[in-house]
Image (cartoon, rainbow, N blue to C red):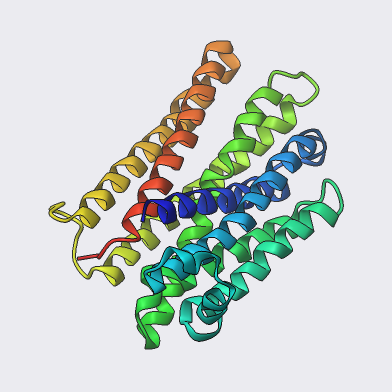
Length: 290
């Protein structure tokens, strides 16, 4: 289970990084800022997309070993082929692998500095993850609702966590006189839409809990519920930092460099906490949601 949890963590985080970073440049950043940040973001998203593809392959191998209860099945083409052909997970994962490979191709062969295609391709990768895991346990209308809700939850989480990386880069661009205006515009747009993104994360997260376990996560009397509660606490801290950034520290930017340093520190802390939240999900999603 440890290997699969680590694989899931790397895969989720890489896919979220590509989506959030590319969507930030596509939707929030003015053209001059996009041109300035694109080389660095392209390197980051290229590495992250390759990680997402490789971990998708490893995830399939680990699932094959888990289903066969035999580690040799992880490298047995026949066993892996049987998983792809004969299981619901395999059917969903075949599509997911194609989407992950397409994402790498879009970044490698797509036009430099154009981020719409990357954002759309990475959104599809994240959304397809809603077809596996606890969301895939139910059938009928409830199963469709759970999968769709989980897909939205993953995309909105990526739109927040992944976008924090270019947001921190914008704080560096703010120090450049020629990019300050554009950096402020991008950060303001992200801050405005961030209200709706975070609200969607909380709402879809609550629906996920209701559909998965059917009861509140308190008390934390099972490993699943304890880790879920820890994730809720981490997300609450992230939201608190985001509120402080938006309504306390950002308005003080014009007063001096101290507010800029605080914003950098708190935004970097949000990135770290986001990684912790993803790590917790990667573990408790493998447990019995009792």
